[in-house]
Image 1 (cartoon, rainbow, N blue to C red):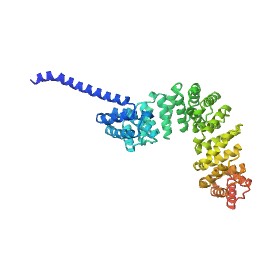
Image 2: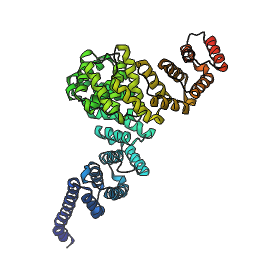
Image 3: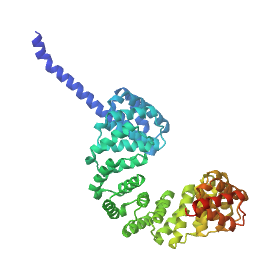
Image 4: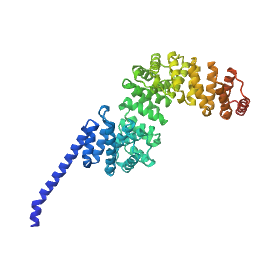
Length: 485
């Protein structure tokens, strides 16, 4: 009898179980499809709340990914908050089942949502996800390694030493499978996190890049070169030449940010591109001038100064026009850096636009409290070097800022500021002169002979008699250094 029962019931039970498994799989796939197909936060919230008990780890990853991709007009802040809370709880529930793919989807989505200020990062959850990632490090594929590091960079989260070591080791072991996007994102993330790859990993990544140079697109060229510049990497001259040739070949596809980043990176690496690439990048910048943000204008102008490359007249006019139009968006560092670079260009025979000089002075005066001592000194030195008469409101604002931050001035900035005031022929604020003399006295041991001479020349030119303490300190410093520093 038992045998007969087994003979009759076995196949039907298997069929029944098979049907159940197939049905469950179909329901799971259907739920995944609904999540990926929804087009607004209201529907996504309904799906998550209504089917939370049916969610598996794949659904969790899909929901995070969908939330991060919803376009502006389809989102609701309150629904976003509800969805985020549900997803955080579901992520914790399924944490031990998450594979590298879902881990990177979740972390990258969290990073995007945080960058767009839609959510705050749950630090405890992030730590738990990273611990899981470390445990599964040997299962990561190139895209997972790149996306995980990219997510950390976007969130500004520095990984633990053990996770960083695990990801570096994994990247080195599967580098031959990296495509241009993977290499670029991985290196960009390391640079953003200020993590050095180490000689071996850097060599491996550069070798992989060299094998794919002809596949690099403008974004990859700009981001990779930017990362290498941040790392102060030493590149083989032949590889640099290959990358420049590739940049020239696709120069017409660069966007404004990519032009600025590539030029900044090459300048930082101490590379002066060949004339063809210089012309191509300036020509592309002219075409895209309207799309340059202040930082982009500053970076490309600074780059040409560092490269000692005389700018194309049309290019420089376009960049100055753009700076003038977007002056209200410049921060203090941007104003000072642009003015400093334009002042350096006067040695190449460049005459900066007068309207821009006036506009930048007005902008500097309106945000004077944001200026650092370096910014004040550079701004004043630039204006004096260019030969533009200072506006009274600008001069007053810069001097007041210098008074407020006098204790933070180093010898270089003291000398620059005093020299600029003297060169301008401006009547200096008495309190500023007193504080700068005091600061020079206190830091006399750090002055170079040239800075000593500049300070004393400035005081004499302005008709200010140096106080006894300053003269004594300056003379002692010159004597000790033999006036050779």
